[in-house]
Length: 256
Ligand code: PEP
Image (cartoon, rainbow, N blue to C red):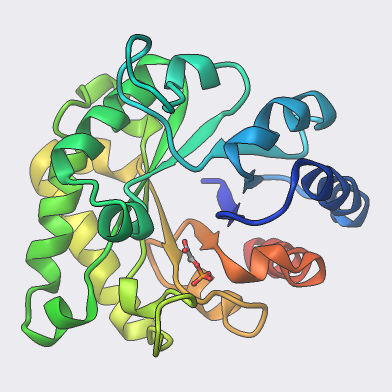
């Protein structure tokens, strides 16, 4: 199975800065096989960057998209408009769930809309700190996972990527803590078991599962060796070119 390293740039970098970063990133990339390097710039940068990149080396992800393909939805960008520009879309990121108040129903429709438009969804799931403290981690993960996947057919399931992102471990969250490898392993197990119980072992085996939460060059290797983890979703460290490149190098070594 491929290893995925996905950089989420969030609301950072102008179009010009994104273009310069990508130019430098491509120059610094090691040669690799079986590794998928993906960056998620702001929506505005996607079109120009899609013309700049060599898709064999680097892929683009949208950070969001709207669940209807067209119509009277002022300010939205649809997956049908993103079609052809990006290969992936991050959906259900905790910043969209908790700051922008997206619920599981909306996320479910977005996952389906992405697939309908030939874009692979990266569905983010993860508990907030109080849910963990009250022993609700497993229920939260299962609800978000099954909610997000509710409209995905068995045939399309392998197109979905799941990212486990405990919200309390995301670097921009006040007082963020690092998730320990055993905490991550436990959550990945919940995800894998839920997928097996719902879709069967064969289908579940084909689903890519990433981890995200304050990933840096110093902890990337540890997270990548957790059984069931197929890659990393990287926020803050993906904005720093040499750190992102280091993480890619580490992924390459872990695979070797
Ligand atoms: C994220 O927000 O998806 C993320 C993983 O951020 P960070 O790596 O900065 O914790």
